[in-house]
Image: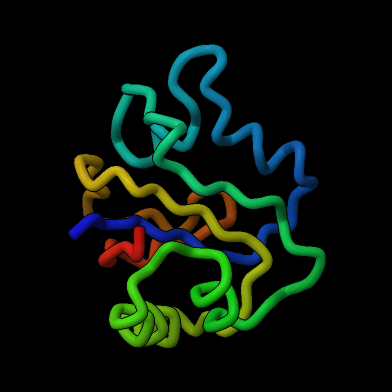
Length: 122
């Protein structure tokens, strides 16, 4: 089964500044550096949605915006509860399971928090 890495958060930046973090035009992005790789990631494997106009419940984002297998949603919700995360206005996901996100995880990836690797619905 395919896997998906998921980041959620409450981003307080302008959308242009938020997207710049993922920009690979001049080599590896700040995101790539934060996940510990100097290599570019394949943009065909990412889901980078515009910032939501308002904070949404995590369950709604997982069900409507992220290609996570239905059976893994409770695990993702449990992880968000452990992080005291109930709402978010941003989500980013990477469906390239060859990418390894090493512990310890950063506290913030451009305002997002890494919640884990889950089975994908793709």
